[in-house]
Length: 526
Image 1 (cartoon, helix red, strand yellow):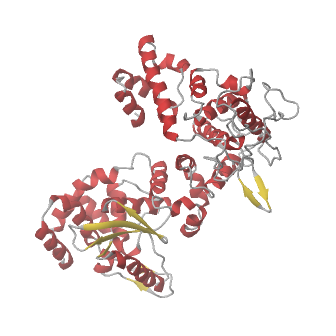
Image 2 (cartoon, rainbow, N blue to C red):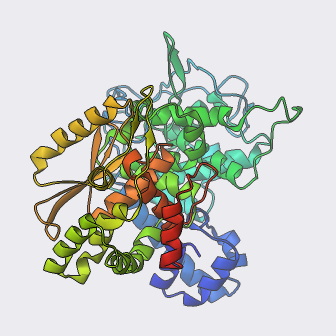
């Protein structure tokens, strides 16, 4: 059951609807697209359906108000349109912008591939024009798209000082367009026409907010963008995801173009390479392109340079998204299993006679707090495995890490924040001497194990701050998998143990450690 949908139903007092929504596979995406027509199937009882619809309408209005997107005629910033500033001539008078040649206000233009366009918008709201729907527009494709209960909400939300429901407007328009198209495609000219019609109906809405075409200046392509285009890409990806998008015809299996050459995917990837805002759009596009980005990844360094969002402080969220898409239902498994496994590991470690383990356990006894079990178990974990010779890339040279090197390679502990960079650089120099590269690693700043000041994950040249040590370990593990990185060589066995025993992930590339298999047997089922 989708947690978002379940939470809303319980919050609104519709406990009896949880089961039927679950049976009909209503997830968040479907929930946000409900209308009175499909609610008749979901909620047959008239009274309950009307009560739900009232709650649902209020929810949509509140969601729209959260967007805080109202643009006034003298605004120069285009939200959600790719980050470009688009100048607005507020002194110009209203002049009707002609529809593309051969079209009428209600006819559907030919739907073809997106291409460069030289279409120029000419209509602007004159200074002092009232914030109301244009009474001169009696019929149009936009009005037809808004001829429903949700459309009435959109129209009612337009006005000075109100929060205009732009996203819902675009959703209704694009749904209508895709429904009428057998190929589920919309041409660049059609996008221009729709954006212009929105401007004609809602006079203070700049058409450039809704669509700006693809351009290629001196070999530097810039993807089409705008709210209509963003919704179009998202809706097509949903259709594709659920198998509702017709496959290309007249192609044999060997001739069929690979999935990641789809022009919509190309546009999304190009958009991600040039935008970090709005965050919701970045998140949506990131979720839709996990497989395509993974297939094209050449190196971690290049990957970070390609996608600027990965250089933001909260970029680890995007590693979590890709991991969840690749390994469903494992997003919280580490936090659920580790507390129980940690106690087993400490009990097992107490039976060992290793001097390093004994030293760590003495520290543990001195503090003796159940709250620290999870941290001490992580600290001692690398010492439970035998170190092995590492074949380096330097000809004729092998490296057998010491117990201390294995311990410090798993989680880096430093006493002062000012020492973090120098410790990481020293580690990088040592690995470089063996012609090895640095891999993602957790970093903890603390003078004593019971007083952790801060936690980080070091990836490439980025140092990502996280809330807890467990979070740092979890993000490091997930980053290794989504970035196709190796585990740190000196503690590969410890990470392999977490992979197999905690995350229950098994691949054909896994190294088979006798000590890892033995520990899993000794601990029993997680």
